Length: 188
Image (cartoon, rainbow, N blue to C red):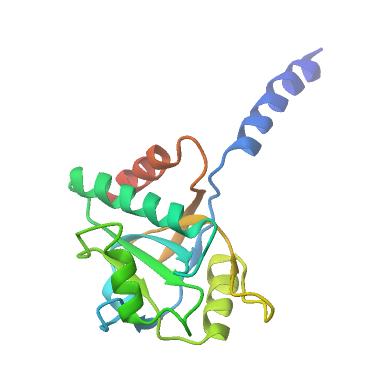
């Protein structure tokens, strides 16, 4: 009888954990330095000791990237309204096309405040595919037969020590609240 009670308790608990859209990781982001939308070097040296949120996008995207970038702009606005010290990093997954000037034009469509948001380029396709897979455990793949790049749609929260502490899919209903809660905890 006791084992039935334990099972009745554990099954719903496991289902709740399995349905959680966030994923705790603990993976460390290794050193990088690329070029931001202003043509300046930007990387882990500038991010050292800071909480940051990262995603993967590209300018020629005809599907999810405009919505992801809009969500990133919304997060930036909410973070800034709360006075939280957070950096935002968007890696282009199409670096041969997305030059700093193209990225600069793109970000201006979503925010007037670039002070804490860096769209990065200045690396090879192979480099971004490797970074995405080995550091963020997500896929980036540019097929030879399409102008569209295959990539993940998660937002990654990186702590002050450069560790990915969580990732969230931007389509989840409570995405913004979950990210803000996580960031606030990290900054305490």
